[in-house]
Length: 312
Image (cartoon, rainbow, N blue to C red; front, side, top):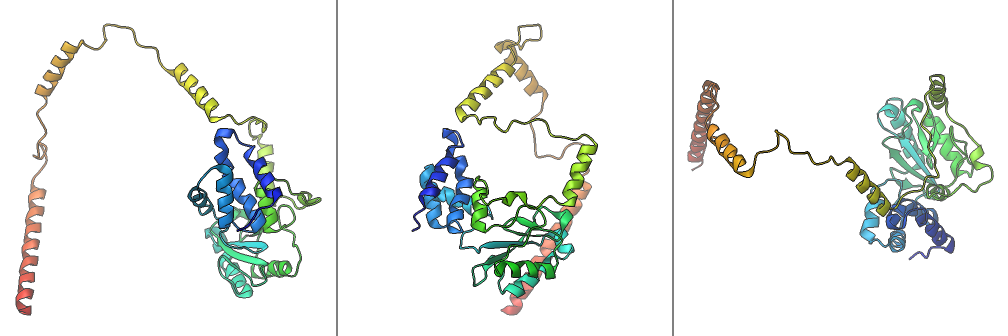
């Protein structure tokens, strides 16, 4: 069983401290990334570690780890290459890119090359239709790829190079990316200064600036309230919105005795429900359907009887 390093344990405490004490289980997602950053996948030991530090059982942790595809359940290569094969990218050649990489690397979906460098997977959608066909390496984008450029990227990775993504910072390993996904800054010197946004993204930004579209102000330092505080505020808001009891007026409900009389009068005025067809409905179609169904059943029974007699 893996014994996690002191650094990982310290980072786990830091992650849990980000959340109110009564909401510590919300730290599970970044904690799963944290254990993946040490082992390269979420192992049984990683599941146990997360369960212990959060006071959960392993089934609860495993249910989350198996739900999200970013958590790998078996050892993964240094570089996770994901090729979008969903509708838009597929139409533009995404499947051809994936098939070419499968043949070139000698691995299929969710399989890793013998040198441990590349894990290949097809992705249902990478949310970049305007750049398709796309593939990502450890979640950094390579836009407008074709079979040739895709092969060039993986060959450079296997040779020890770090090809520059179309958008975003320079490439890092999957373990290094998992540290960032756990909520810690990229510690590589100048790593986040590289790269830049794509033209389609900039086009949207320019249109927003041109038409004065912006998001309302938001303070990222707003503290997260505890559950008890949130419940207290909700109860206060509910009490404030509750209408005052209505005063007695001429339209007040009748006294209990009068209400019983009104109920009895209503029941007498409404005949009880029955199985009869409502008045006005034509019975011709129903009778015709019943006759045809009966004739069909008789014919089927007769045919079955003849077949039984023939067999005897």
